[in-house]
Image (cartoon, rainbow, N blue to C red; front, top):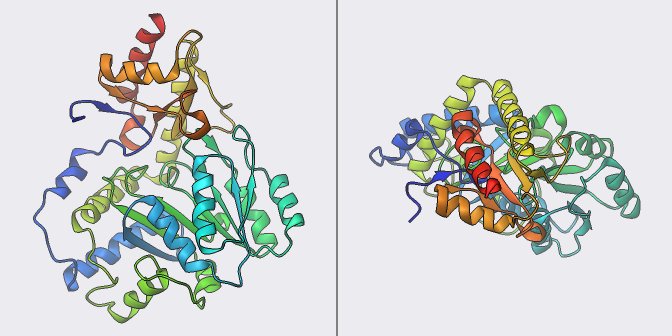
Length: 365
């Protein structure tokens, strides 16, 4: 078991005692007027974190379930999807897209490069029948951040549906859906929302819903059209088609209150400042950041080990010698880089200082 370790991986994140206490409360029904009022209030709070006045759905499952639900509900035979990929989770986005639309076009960008506006414009020139675009915001397999705001502007100019995987960014990195023109955004409870795993969260802007509401798409559990049907016809007592994961949902409500009490702008600034501070500290110890700060994710911090050290061995020694859990790189970065989660409670300096001290001890031999 991993109890007693300092959790500093890129999700699931540490969870505050206040949030954990919600998980220990007695089980209550997932329906009825009292619960329904609580549920709807919570979804309004969640919409505030997404930065949308559109619809938000809380689907029991992982972040990948949210991605599946997003494509399940928006990809029909009239669509031509373009997926921009520059990492392992971009590849997953593409795999899910192609499971619904086998003709989806996937543009593979080098793993060390952002998806640029120029890249998107070139892809749209080659595929002028594109109707929808998808991209990962914070590519947590490598720690690279894609310029979603600029990509959204191109999609809005072309009147394209724009879907963003915000699983490791929503609540920790600036991503105001409505302001930027993001139509569909997905996250999960166990990342920047500081909650235990168990809920996939899908937000659809008002414009996005106008684009997809009349589509006839497959599936039931992960079909947002089914969820919206129940939200309307069972609005006063059971506004979703399934049994809600009550303990995790209650925990998320408390986590959202903590987030909004801090203030979303202050919170995003805290994540950014923490990331820069950690980069500065580790640079002095010989750990080289994988990406320049201008294109690096502030929630997933990726570094190469100092010369003479193996990154995978550093991760192992952090666990065995210091009882601190950090992560290997993923995909092409596995064994080449190490990753530190800089999300929620983990962004506090009292949490980061033991990590830096342990990495210093390993670097010193």
